[in-house]
Length: 313
Ligand SMILES: NC(=O)c1ccc[n+]([C@@H]2O[C@H](COP(=O)([O-])OP(=O)(O)OC[C@H]3O[C@@H](n4cnc5c(N)ncnc54)[C@H](OP(=O)(O)O)[C@@H]3O)[C@@H](O)[C@H]2O)c1
Image 1 (cartoon, rainbow, N blue to C red):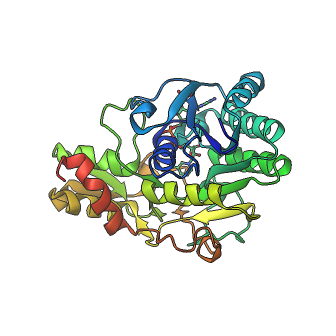
Image 2: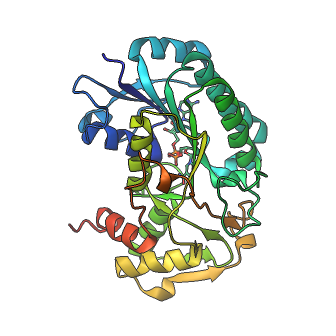
């Protein structure tokens, strides 16, 4: 083990994508450095297949975190655990708050000198502004946003080199039988390929960002030598409604356009989300560590992701 080991807490869509990027691109800086995913249950895709390891961890348990940190000895930590389902958090606000704050407090106390990147969210904003930059005043839209904001504050108060990386809606491949609520792209793609209708709000705007770009930016921040600003925003360059985005997904998959049915947000599970779930990153394009990363728009991102759904190269 070296001091360059990376621990990724949470092995779902985003955590697995980040671990895969670091393990396969040599981003852990030294051949001896390890990448370890941690969650309560083993992820369906074995991390060993792409050169990472996995450890069982309930990250709300401080003693379990201390034992794992002593074994892995990471200099770099990514906090990307759940609960991530906005609707579940709205129904269980106290459990959502307790879980997110406990994990942030544990890592701030137990790894105060590590480079920690916590993946946060646009839901810390109320959605009144078309774009939310790092200087937009926070005002959480819902229970999930309140929990994530408190976790940001707890982490940044205790860990001097920590960064809260607020990310817009992330998309990438997930199998239809993943046993969880799928990301929007995956949910639409599976339905459209089965010839089923997709109802999508035409009054709910997002700046989607493809998983590969989230992983690239996170790896670059973990690698950065000097000080970093405590809060950074990562959104895609295109501001689209979910209905426009679903239409783009149908187009790239060759599915009939009429399968996408625009509906009002209030009639959907997105009713508690900010109207503008949009992030504009003003700082990332100026940082030496990240300024060369070109974040993809929805058309380019869809081209990247679609083959995993259609099975074509
Ligand atoms: N996906 C997005 O669009 C998006 C956008 C912005 C921010 N984020 C943030 O990124 C995080 C992950 O999102 P995701 O889409 O990857 O979610 P996900 O696919 O639901 O994965 C969440 C992961 O966290 C693990 N987990 C939950 N509670 C845990 C605990 N107490 N200890 C250890 N692991 C735990 C889960 O596994 P177990 O249940 O087996 O433990 C799972 O591996 C969320 O916190 C979310 O706020 C996501």
